[in-house]
Image (cartoon, rainbow, N blue to C red; front, side):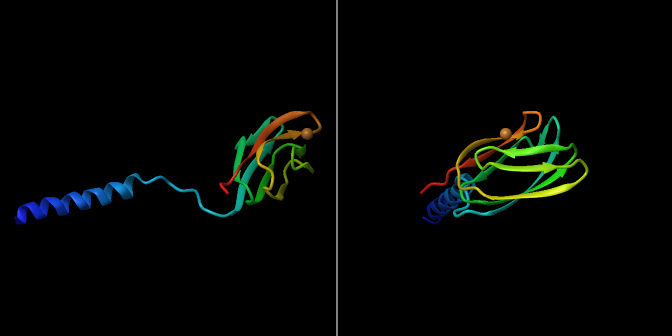
Length: 120
Ligand SMILES: [Cu+2]
């Protein structure tokens, strides 16, 4: 009788532990403040891809290694960046999709901004 109870209790504890360990990681609900460090050079950005969620308020903290004419397509943000400076670009990610970031002066693709839609 006691042993049977022990087995049931152990089984219940095991199930709870598995539930906690295996539950999916749920993305945070509403939009968030995102501050992302990006290094910009003439041949590309590091990281190459910036991924955020729809509605996020995004601050890109740019370390500029080469002089480029930064152009974020879709959001149509254009900024002349000088080598050796740091700049910030702020946006609210209202448009979802993939948006090229280009050196408008040379038409080189430096990277991309990916805005994932939020469930609604
Ligand atoms: Cu462009």
